Length: 357
Image (cartoon, helix red, strand yellow):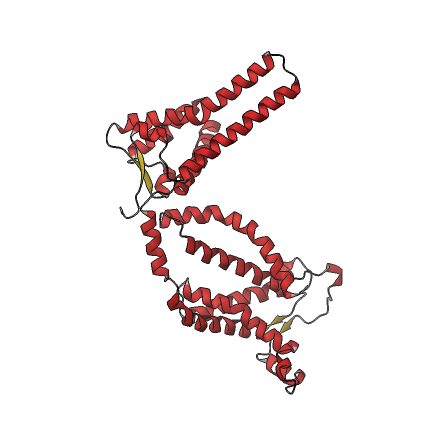
């Protein structure tokens, strides 16, 4: 497997890992800044993609267990041994082709591989040169230990050499990346500006933030209900619903646990308890009772009119499709920062608490 194959696998793996970290990343961004800055997303996710590719370059290709030479050399602990290797193997009269020689090519590739790491550390993570040297060395050491342990002892013997020269060369690549970023950093928005833009954007409640709040509160309420239900009885579901979505926001100035974490709240002028209760009733009616009640009526009529199984299935499929469209339209409406009828009727609105501290 060549370098490009390892990078290709890195790109294939990236969407799955990105999907896993998206929810905690979004939650943390809303908690800290009140918004998800697009440029920050580009930086963080490109950094993750870069780390994945470097990791696969270090461990791939994976050999068959039976093909591993149990007597092969494990470590190369002589510093700068790569210089002697170059002097012994490279024909310096070959002109430009000198860079295609294996011993030189490997050194140059390792330097290039770690240069982005130094650039990220200086630009986004705001590390100085000493910190960049330290973290570049530690990242390289992690990769070398991965190789030395046979991919964390999955293999009975290392299938790649632990080379102290790799630690030196990779760290050098991080230093070069740090220095190179000094030429470009003035043309890029600073980390401080990204943070400031995020805070300014976080002073408004976006549609995605509202949807995130809904999902987070739903998850917390699900856990809360499950614990109480197991301890007592699930028949208290509606009581718990009122406690979580009415009593708690009333006591904490319009904030549920989820909205408090995401730095937002429901704002109302007076009669807060009544408005919160009416809003909850309207939401339950609008999103649950009415849609599913209509579906129940459709299916009840379909069965009582002695329709064939095929027609019953068609009616059910049409209902499910319409239900999906209904929820999708509402999500889209909220995503565009539109205020739905129940908020207008109850005279409440979401406001950001960023900057209130």
